[in-house]
Length: 330
Image (tube, rainbow, N blue to C red; front, side, top):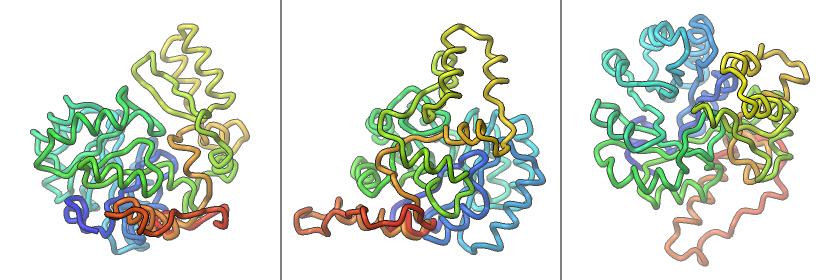
């Protein structure tokens, strides 16, 4: 399948993997790239040493393009950018801040710049600043979110941005979601939560099981009243956080409460299950290659001129609970 984003990045399928802090590492990124999408290493909360090592590791695992996600509010973001430029990755996605000041430096290193934007105003601004593509992300996504839905963003942004590829993110977890985005005029999608449920993803098995067990009403949004919204799975941590938020706790108290150590204690395992968007349609753990095949079959069925004559809808009851990254595309 060819779209503007596949041509820009040199990938087979119009799917890039979301940059999920403490989750998107070299193993996951390489698996997604090897399966035909574009994998991403997430640097939020990471050191320059870790970032450099993961990029170099990823190069040994794939000869396909992969990218790095930059969390612009991170205190060491400038140092991370130096590493990314030295290693000359194919592209970066940028979020949680203003990407414009970093475009020239990244371009000078031959790196394509793809910011994640939550509204029309920023979409227009980054297009005018010369980015190579953009991701418009709706509030249905997991992790940090804006205030507009995916459908509203597609309706408002896609008719306005004509000169660069636009990817859609937020609540997309299967081929039907990809088909909907393409039919609306997008050039591809970014998916994060779907790739958590892969064997290549380092997320703790308890967190993966919590996602599998979740229903469509089992997510919560913390920080919305502070313009720092995060979509999470409901758990004891989110209940405590929301109680503090509603009670008017100082922001520093909330920040301290939400800062973990990434150690595998039961409490932190529950917290690592938080950053998740679309739940009910995910359901099982696959390899990335299996997910790849699944997405393409669904996409072909939904885009067929005569859906009745197209391939039958996929029934997943016989799928194993855990898959490898390549099977995400199946």
